[in-house]
Image (cartoon, rainbow, N blue to C red):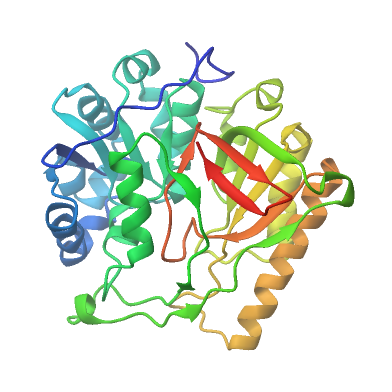
Length: 360
């Protein structure tokens, strides 16, 4: 099977069980080795909260410079983790910005023959889309440094949905988080573990449904990920489904910690639109945007305006290509916390009448 098009059927890898071995790999960057205390917290939570036995692979301990120069080594760890019959889940340590270079080294037939639950986000959009083209469902979320190692108290919301994604056949009904944060706690702090991020009250999802689609129940297979990364796949012409194979699918979309402006969002969505992708989707699910970084602190008013501008840009430019598509904003997946790992390649049901989202 090639790394484009749609498979005849999708495989949801078998669930893990308590006590199982799980792989820890770095298919993107080696930044985890720069912050070993953060990775240690994530590994402890896998052991203590989920009763899993994490196995740290070579890439997760490799020097960042060496790892960047050896995309074939990162692919080899992916293969080894999937092929090991004792491994029931694979966790990415962190994202990055060059996983697209790994894709040429992957063996799609081997991954499909040994389907394993993969957890990652951001630059791991590349591997998730590659697995989509091989008919293997993966999970956008559950990344170790960003989400499993959230400092302070481990969010109940993250634990609840990661537990479902690990141990159950489906994610089930999705609920909005009661509180959320995009507080950028410095990973190098000595007191990182005890530092509680500043959470804000959740105000639910924002439904933007054209009148003619009100009350409709939409069911489709999920594809997408980080809006920063998707155009890289298109530029490289690698691991991108044919537009015809996305007909009736649902787009999952979230923006990165790079805090793209409304113009940045417009440009990236235009690339997806001109490639013929945006017009194919029956619905769009948008993750809550990150609004601040360690280098760019903003006032509450500036952050609210940023979110408004980004929603408006997504609404305008998605609808430029698909005028009546329903869009749901501010879901809890992506670069903020807490998160639910959503199944890329899995089916989702969106009830535009009851305002519910469910992964059967």
